[in-house]
Length: 196
Image (cartoon, rainbow, N blue to C red; front, top):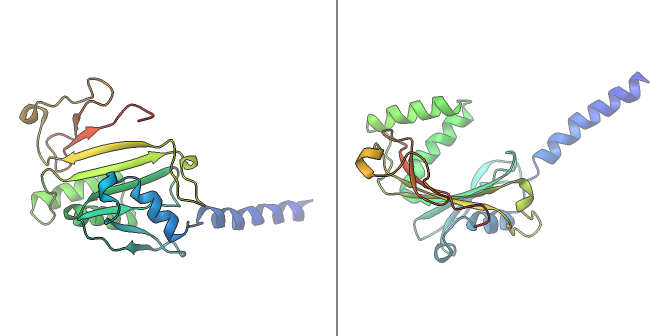
């Protein structure tokens, strides 16, 4: 009785990680990542994604200054994002620190220090678009994304509610507000009501 049970446990331990690390094709990653971009900017955007081995790579070069990130197949839920190319060093630094095992607060604090020291830059007014939802919103065979939500962000480093007139929380669904005021990561957050 013990041997079959041990075999079943070992089989699950071996098989589950294989499913967790299944990487969609480059075509599916590109198509779904571009869904986070404004429609008129999709054709010429650069796309980062993942190789079959799970390595972070460039899937497609771009020419319009927009960079899109495919969903990470090893993270729960669907999350694709697009941002202005001048944000790339800031985003890359976050990925690097995360890979080193740093948590959200450590990453926040380290980048705050680096921005204040002039080692890292967040261009004022640079944009980020995030398309997100549960895993089911992505059809991994076709790259179609249905039922996801789209959030828009405009970075305004070190601005505050007082300097912008923006509230600290949304006054109504879809209304802009300021998040992380007074820090390097201060940004205008716009989250439309669900289903939009």
